[in-house]
Image (cartoon, rainbow, N blue to C red):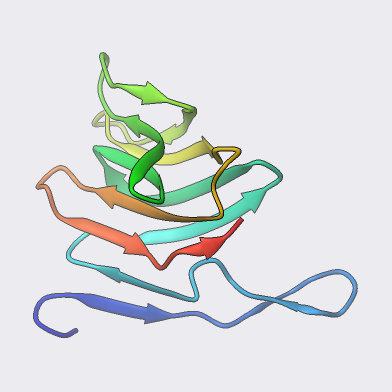
Length: 122
């Protein structure tokens, strides 16, 4: 932990052909929430995290896709796939914008603390 930020490094994951594919969470930082898993599935990114009020896929200078917690939570190019009993989001499937070349994931917990991944190519 450095200045209140947690940093994590993950190993590579093996693909079926024996090649090594970089883990999308190869490096990420956090001031509170935890990114458990970030996986690319075709034109979508699946995110699993500790309970958060928002999960955002950032593409360039704009937000590429987002889901927010709550009954009236704003959803743009994504959907909530898991939540906790308190109404916070723990998983989302976010659409990668067609023009995006790199994206990153940013999550915000109920206290406003954030965690984010490094950008990765899509």
